[in-house]
Each structure stands twice: as structure tokens, then as C-alpha cells.
Length: 315
Length: 315
Image (cartoon, chains in turn purple, cyan):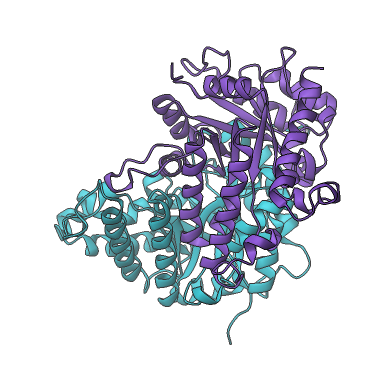
């Protein structure tokens, strides 16, 4: 039976791979493995077509490596937009390739605008294309969205979630150093802004028809674990939501930090690692084992990540 | 003398046109004038290439009409992204055309991410292209950014502002109905979130070297006037900032509402109108005067907007 709800699909895929883990695709030309950057037609960083060809080739190979291991990839649009229209074309090519590998795809676009402008963003980034000439184009299964506008900015995305079994992850608590400047402000009554946004997101997530048979809504939340007590609190404030958890690895969060993102039954979080997997071939630990075989470094880093996460989810 | 500071350029352009007014380009295929939508190769809404050709043609003609009248246009990326890579190509074509008409161009992209991902967004959307093969590509003079992440998400954009005399407008108070859900939350001490964000944005704007000879920073703020007292307060909280003011016209704000966005000397705000100008040919007032001459409707609506704004700025 094909599931018709994003959260159910994601929960099933996590279970099938026994890995609540997502690999983030944030490719930077200057860090590509030599055997890709040095290929003919891909060796000119000053030529955008050459650079994006190399980035796309690398990203494709990474998702092929990780596709047997993880249920989902998160593709960060910024690193593709950086190459203008050709980069955007490559982004959608990569979404399509990931979908063909039966990966769930999270488009990390962090969009939001007033409703009338969020609607075209939702069509562009989440809805299945409505144009006859683009019938092979595939949109992501879910996207990240920014809550600063309030709910009406997210409504066009939620409409697509309902119509096409898609999902969104609203930013609640982000992983960057300055995140407390706005998210950490204390409200009357003692909650922080991010606590209050968590409460709102959980309300939105609980709206009629949005919760699937897994008990989770197609509206999830981005929560980076900073302080253990805060993470426990945010998990408790959003029982309806799957948490997409950035910050593991290159950004310094450990498996112990991410443990409280899960409910007691071991569900409810998808741990994302981007740079620590993507650039594992820069890490001495893997270089010593696999030398210049960058693909084996990536594969091993992904396996190690999964093992690390499993350790805290099913202790 | 060519100015080397975005706010100075904008202030000079406002003065030269005697119009603190910006036209927003939010083009929707279904609302295009018949003589464009019915042109050969542009008459198929189910074909994305046909639809984006028509949208680009319409947008080009609008900016040619308004270019003698206003200092700036704001191009909303959402309406172009909706057509995938071809739409993004059209967006940059339009930025280029506007720049050639000596308009300042605000790319309404509302981006932000953690710093390492905001950097490619800043390169894509604000910096002059660094690729030899794209030497005719032009980036906007300024972009809109989302403050939910705090300052480190904006820093890569601010770096470009410093290096290339560009600008940003940080969302403070948006025009949509739900905006109070987050922006209107009351903090300990009585300020709202948007008041506090305004204070932060003004601090960021006052950083060393960011304020031009006009007295304004290259960091501005998006402030939609809701309540008169609130608008007065936000103007006072951000003396360093030019306010980009949405909501006029189609979104219901009047000239009286926007008056408090200006300082007493009549400077410090750029009033944006999008749909009320863009789709003036749907408005009976203009249809009665100009029948199906849609370009004359747009021109007159732009002139009326300017006259209306002048009335409250120089009473």
C-alpha cells in the first residue's frame, strides 16, 4: 500500500532502514574530491557551468552511496542557487535522482512570505509541477519554512501537504550561534520566542486531517539541540511533530545531544548530518582507512553516523 | 560622482525623481493583459516556457513604463521561481533590464539561513557574479532578508554590502494578517518581538562603516504600517534605517497610514506598491479612462501613487 501521508511515509522509511537519519547535501566547489573537480569540463571554478556540473556529479554520487543506508536526503537550495538558473536546474535534477532512488527528499529552502507570495513558493518548491512540458520534473517531498510571518505564510505550503501528501518543517530553534538573538528572547510569562513558536507549530500541526496514522503531522519542526533541558522542553511542546534535527557532526552536536529529540518510543526525530558525511574524505580518521577513495569515506561516515544515532535511540 | 553606498544612492535617486516610491513586480500569468497573454508563443498557461515568456515581457514593459517615474523596483523572486530554472533566468534578465534603465533593484527574496548557507545565498542574490561566463549577469542592488536566525545569518549579506555598495532590508513588521502571531508577541518588559527586532536591526545598521553620508545605513528594514502608534515607535527605534514599506494599495494601507514611516524631514522611507500599480488595468477607475490601454493604466496608477505619497511627505 502506498502511503498517502508524508509523516507516515517518513516513519515507514525510517523503520525500513532502521535509521532516523538524513544526509544533507550542501556541496561547495572548493571542497570537491580531486577526481571530480579535475574531470574535463568540470575543472574551472570561474565557469559556472563547469562548477555546477562538478557539484551535481558529486551530489549524485553521494546520494547513490547513501541511498541504501538512509531514508531521506536534505538538499540545501542555497548551494545550487549560487549558480543561478543552471544551479536551480541542477537542484531539480538532483531531487529527481534522489526520488528515483526511493529516497524521501527534503528541499531545504527556508522560504516564507506573505500568503500571496508564499503561494508561488509553495508551487515552485513543494507541489508537483503543473506544466505539461515539465512532466519529468519532480518536486521535493517536504521543504523547510520560516515562521517569522506567522501561519498565513505557511498555509499555501500546508494546502499542498493536504493535496499531495507532502510535508513541511518549520524552523523553531536553529543551530547557528546568533539564533538566541531572536529565538531566545523571553516573553511575558517566561517562555522564549522559540518555545512559543514551538507551541504554535504544534497547534498548526494538529489541525484537522494533518495527522497521519503514525500519530505525526505533515507539519514538522526544525530543532537544533543546544541545551539538554531546552531540547526536552521543545520535544514535549510538539507531540504532533517530527523534529528535523540539524547540527550533528560538523556543527558540533553529539549523539547524546540529539537523544532528547526522540520520544520515549524512539520515534519523532530525523537527525541530519551534512558536512560530516559529505566531506568525510577530509577527515583524517577516514583518510587513514581509505586513502583517496572518497566514496568509501562518505559511505563509512554515513554508517558511523547511523550507528551513533542508533546507540542513543535504542540504548 | 558615483556614490559608493547603497543608502546614499537610494536617497539621491529618491530626490532626483522626487518620489520615495518603489514599484513591486509580482507578476501572475492569469492576470496578464490580453494583448500579452494572447501573443503567439505566450498563450499557453500549461507550458512553463510560454508562461514565463509572457510574464517576462509584461514585467519588462512595466519597468519601462515606471522607470522615468520611480527610483526603484522590487522584484519578487517567488513569482519567477514558480517557473523553475527558466523563471530564475527570467528573474535575472529582468534585474539586468531594470539596472540598464537606471533603476535601483531590490530583489525580494526574503532569504536567511545559518551563516555557512547564507553565504551562497548572498553570493547568488546580492553579490556581483564572479563567473567569467556570466559577465553580463547583474545582481540586485539590495535584497530582503529574514531576521529569525539572528545576525550571523545576515552577516554574509552585510559583507557584500560593504564590498560592493549593496543593501539589505531585514523583515521587522510584515503586512500579512498572521504577522502578529510571532512578531506581536510581548516580551518581558513590554516590547513586542518586532520592537526588539527593530532595535537589533538598528544596532546592526549602525555598525562601523555601514552608515553613508546620507545618515542612513545600507541595512534597512521592512515595516508595514498597521497601527499608527506602532509605526511611529518603529520609525523611532530605527533612526539608522531606511524603511521599505509594503502594504500600500492592494493590501489596504493608505497614504495616511504610511506617513509616520518618514522622519520629520521627509526622508527615511521607500513606499512600495505592487498589485495596485501592476494590475491597474483591472481597476474600473483606470478602465473608464484608458479602456484596454493597459500600459496607460499602469503609468497613471504609478503617477497617482507618487502624488498620493508626496501629499503626506511634503504636506
